[in-house]
Image (cartoon, rainbow, N blue to C red; front, side, top):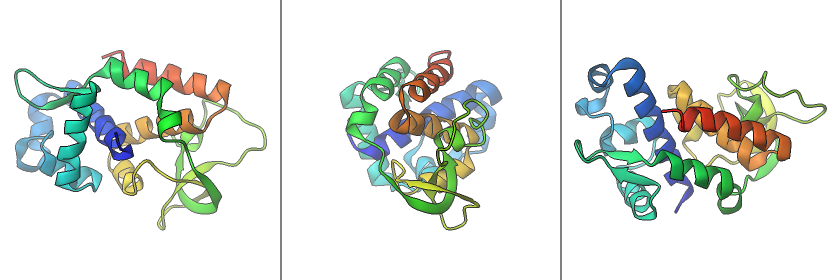
Length: 189
């Protein structure tokens, strides 16, 4: 597996969530070529090449973290397996790399949708380095270089990525809280 595989899987989760909320027809009308799960559409939304996305999906299916939908033949994340990998393996396979103070986009519990969930004393906020970012914080290398821009295009993806970073970065209490939120988002569908 590669780190961008997690980004692609989280985007597929986000698309599924949007499909449930908006309906399949509306989601298709908003997508390139009418197929939200196509590698072409995923390339436009994630900033990852079509080749990398196709290889990522193939790796995810081979590992059992994703599967092909039997009706539509579209890639779908296997929610339980993905959740298990994020909660038990992600921080060991893709550990967070924290750097110096930098301007960027807030992540982990500094992200807008998570910032009121945890009150910490004296620690710096974490940010993905991004030239157009407005927040200062300790730089955290994102799972893939295009994550900041992809997160700004999709609030649900941003929330998933921030929670994943909280798992990668946090202490026991923070990780537990992030896992609880991921569980309610990923496994409730």
